[in-house]
Image 1 (cartoon, helix red, strand yellow):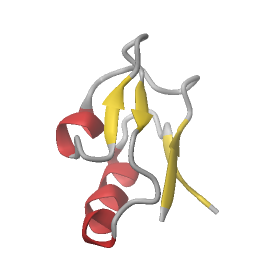
Image 2: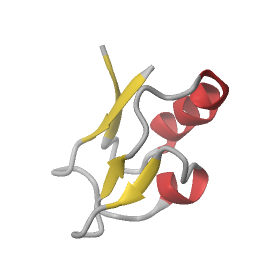
Image 3: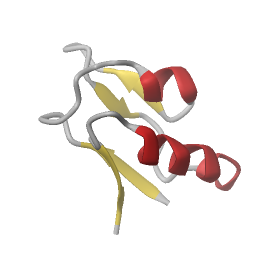
Amino acid sequence: MKVKVDPNKCIGCGYCVGACEQVFDFNDDNISQVILSPVPKDLEEEVTEIIENCPTNAIEEEK
């Protein structure tokens, strides 16, 4: 599973970073970014939940 963050949609709320700091972190502009892709199998369920609950739908799975 590969994921990406749309920086134009992200508001920097920190939900994803707080929920899974192994995969997400803030960049210099306090916008979320993916720091681990592909996502390890043991974190896929957690990241799927983050995608579904992102308040601005800024995170999506790459196809």
